[in-house]
Image (tube, rainbow, N blue to C red; front, side, top):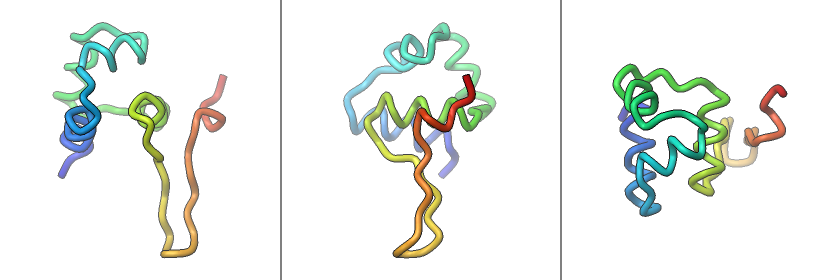
Length: 76
């Protein structure tokens, strides 16, 4: 499943709309649709999406090791 499909699935599970995500990201709904069409989400975008959806974005190495990405990882 592509990143775009996973984000759309999470939006559905959480009962959120694309327009809400676009507003949260500070972009137009059309710009969000373009990101979905191209699958062009940056690491910063994914961290923000995870925050919006109240999810954890992490790299799991094995059952005992993971690196969690959050808003503190975004360069200001």
